[in-house]
Image 1: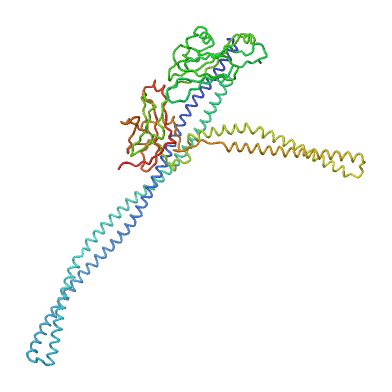
Image 2 (image 1 turned 180 degrees about the horizontal axis):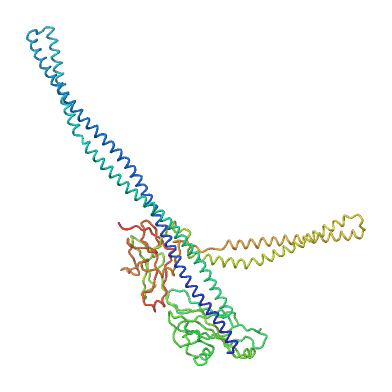
Length: 634
């Protein structure tokens, strides 16, 4: 290889390697930004939940305090009433005792009078029976007996009243009312303390939510910026690869199970000369080489030529016929091509692909160089085994048990990590999602494509309209001048005819220009309307649930505190995990009663590091999985 080709090849390889390193570094930064946003959103959601619970506790404590105040007022009134009652009962006991004693004295006097009346009646009965005085004495005697009887009854009632009033426990009631009042006052003090604590918790939770919300928005901005940089790096690498490296691409099919093949595509080598020149199409054939990533810097044209000459049947390269088509594609299977060292392709190992173009001799003579062409290495790729996640319709939660079915991963040591994503829209409103991040970039690209399509047309039409408007203005100025000249009185017939012919021509030019402007303006409105329709037709990826940033990258990097491992049941292809009071959501918070959660399953290889590189996990489709309301077992 001559020095110019060596320098050119070295520059291309260096540029692609540098761009690929930038891409890898930006990808690592992007992943870190994803985790930062995820944890920031988790803190924001937790703060919102804490504020919600603090508000609920505050409202409850407010009701308790209001009731305690009412009870305290009632206890104060009861105590006052009991003390007054105790005082009045004491007076009533004294007054009743005095009244009973007085009644007894009166009763004794009445009885003595009744006895004297009886004696008198006996004497009258003996001495004056049947006389008027006898009748009066008898009437007095009977009345006196009744009075004595009533006096005796009154004496009994007064004694009973004295006994009953003495039995009233007003003193005990007063003491109990005093104790109750003191207890209620103590309860009110405790309730007031709890109320003040709940109020302080609301204030602290509000401040925490404000702080976490600010941090979350910063994390959102960082991720959006990093994602923009990453996409620009991807586009830059794609442009470098397209312009400098035949647009050499390796695509591994996205299928479940072992990926045993890959597609290599590249643009045909283009001659700097036309086909009319001597030599015609310059490439006799293409050869594809598989190289381990750690060996790509040392693989050269001489190595490729040596393998073609000395190893024609060793499967160390794949030959493709030379075609004039703009693009070449070939599917290569794992067993079809070994690497340049003769080793079979291994799962999980990083490889690159080189394309070698064997040029014909006539073309080499035309260039006055006898070098063939070797591309720069492709982007790094590897073959892996893709695990399957359970279908969303098989994931169910019944009686605090998460159950799912899967049979695609038989023969692999797989652990199923079960996670529970909070699905409360009031706590996740306005947070950035995976679809939201994609929307920002995709909408920008779509808008750029729309602008590239319509803006040049709009600019051209506007320029033509402006030019014609200027021309029309010039014609109108000439018409004014012509009108002034026609209004002159000293014009000869020949001059008058000339001015009239000139005016007629200017009028035709004016009408023609006006018609052209109207036509162009109509076309401009049509193009602008089509552009706006294209902008309006941009569809944004639809996000269903759970309202925060979550994907496979995030799920596969979470700690064991955020998920539960499923266990195989006795039924075929069935797995389950028990949901207990210690079960946490994907942020590590315990599940809240009556809150909604989305059950998610992450299938991950349960083997050593070497095997882990060979097997890629899978995340169930949580957007299509039915959520459940958590109710702990009583």
